[in-house]
Image (cartoon, rainbow, N blue to C red; front, side):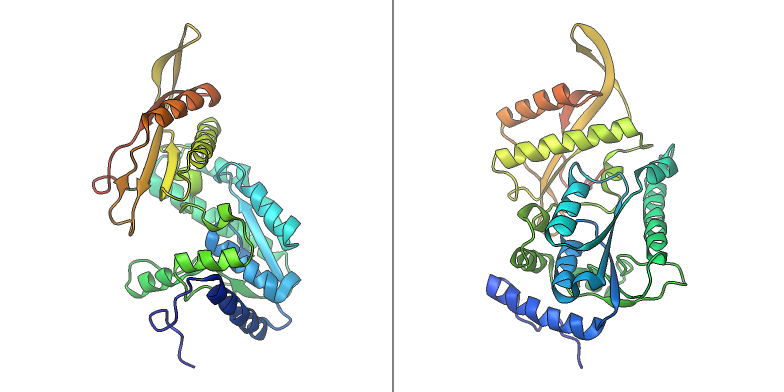
Amino acid sequence: MAEVRPDTMERITTPELAKKYINEQVEALRAQIGDKKVLLALSGGVDSSVVAALLIKAVGQQLVCVHVNHGLLRKGEPEQVIKVFRDEMKANLIYVDATDRFLDKLAGVTDPEQKRKIIGGEFIEVFAEEARKLDGIEFLAQGTIWPDILESEAGIKAHHNAGGLPEDMQFELVEPVRILFKDEVRVVGKELGLPDNMVYRQPFPGPGLGVRCPGAITRDRLEAVRESDAILREEFAKNGLEGKVWQYFTVVPDFKSTGVKDGKRTFDWPCIIRAINTTDVMEVTVEHLPAELIDHLVQRIITEVPGINRVLYDFTPKPPATVEYE
């Protein structure tokens, strides 16, 4: 049978079309998987979350989700994955807190590419270790979407999400959203009952907060990134900017400057705020925030986040800057 390609199919834009797609996929997944088990690396991002929800609907407990917390997730994210999938959807979920393991490996590493390799390699190691403890797994589910396939066909990047698994682990792939674009994945996720902050989650790099903690990652600076990011997200939600601005985050670089607090000298890090809009990520414009909101963000971050004594705003578009700092 010829593969359905998105350029020939009806776009999924409404709840009705999403429901139809879900019903078709549930039937296809049951036919493909039968009574076997399927494994999924569940990050909490929209693609893997929608794949998990589809598979839970189709094969229930035959799906084994592995959520690896590498210590580089945003505040509250591991807890949300557990709440939504284990508590609410009754998923067969294995939670692995590998924070120490990742951060120990990353200690003293300053080169961005090296950091990415360590994070990616260690993730595969942890995932493979968990997979080896399980019996009867014949399928590996992935949150591959259509742009991944187009980029791989064009030679832009290798197509693999949880790829790179050791040779002794050969699974048949299950990719139920591979013919969808990101906006369609969101419509399907909404119809499956996933929470809005998961469905409309901002793009988040694989190495997580690791790329927003430039230089060698230390636990205290990483915590400053996590806490300042949580304040930024909370204030954007309160001010009606959530969902209107494409991406916003904080960066805490590895240098310190002099400040004053309670009449005493401080020597702490700056926190950089970045808020941007784009349609294709090739070019990015900067969101200009109201002055009162910036003042409020500065006050909250320097008061509530240990180790920060300055707040800066990044006004640079892409080009010449990139979205992330590493």
